[in-house]
Length: 267
Image (cartoon, rainbow, N blue to C red; front, side, top):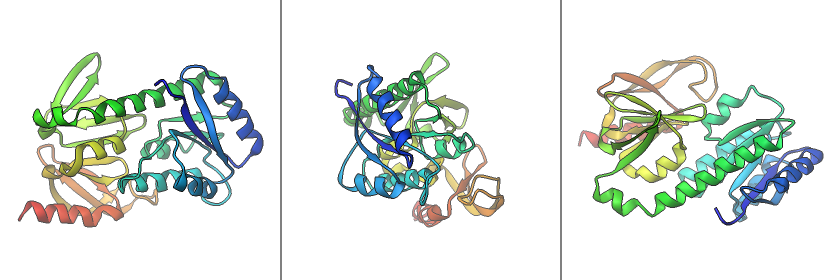
């Protein structure tokens, strides 16, 4: 990217914000500039309603709504078509990493942050933005080809037709692309693919995007810890995926959309 990354810092500690600003300004490649600071998730949310940035450096534990809540709000806005900035969590607590990556976080930095780690995170964000820009100029070509996803898997470059993709699932820093015959590990964000793939795919959970044609059944199902929003093992909803006979958790807010997709497929 030729332009500097526009960064919003969100942390309730002024000294932490000051140090992070200094680290951002000390990174020469990619270039980045702090365009605003917020001392709470609520303040950041208000700022983001009227302004845009490329990246939010976000603390997790803050008074009031925490950083995970803000990330959840931004993801929901993205589902409604509002562009979502990249998120890198910056926190002294490592136990929230899994939840953070379920929310499509680009990285998870623990305090005290080293400049090298921050620079690596900024590089990932810059690469993501470049890839997103490239995707935006390819839709006509991909539509003419019937649609493909290009996967770099262990040194191989594979072109997977969209018609073969059963689901995409976020797992830590990576995505798993599942077809009837193989599971491929790839980089990327579910939110990016959700916007790119359109009506053929359905978000059933924070960590899963499923081809509508692959959904065979929706029913009550025992959830493993962490699969439902409450984070506790309980009975919830799940969908059965055709050809591989696997079950994927469905969040409560997506149950109605899955029912609608199943009804439409039978009409």
